[in-house]
Image 1: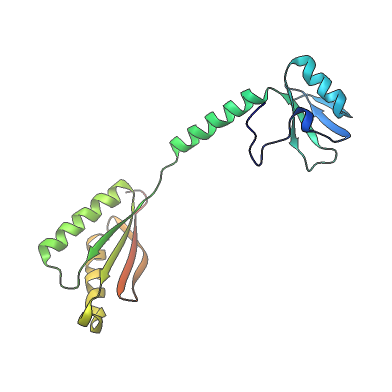
Image 2: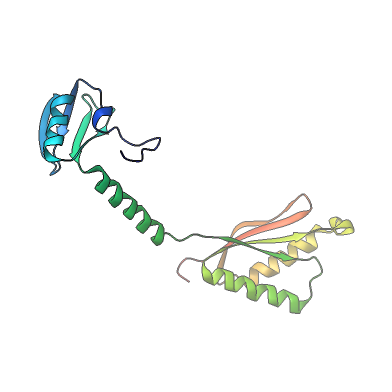
Length: 175
């Protein structure tokens, strides 16, 4: 027997419907017949009877080699996973009174992240009396965004959320 998951189709003896619309392994319509007749056809060919459209009236079953079908399906899924690119969100933390050298280092690091195609989360954590001057943090954020303007778009403008100022950036398409 095959490994059957929660949403796997019904096979062979599991199909209990009185009438079925049957399709051959070549895709040819064999017509409407009873489940026993369809199972006999599948057994004669040495393959499985698989219910592919249970909601149809009458349900549609196909005569096919189910293990070969599952193998090809997992192969396709694996191939699709290889092709898809995962986008990570990298975080860069600035401070309210950051020096020019540290600022340039953070900008260079952000350029590397954006060149790889990752999204960027830029944050400034306000501590103690720094909460009295969030506008200084927003000017730092704006300066940071201006440095990266030619290679990045601002997805979410700098905004004070609690004790943090957050800004989200993504690489420009075509760069």
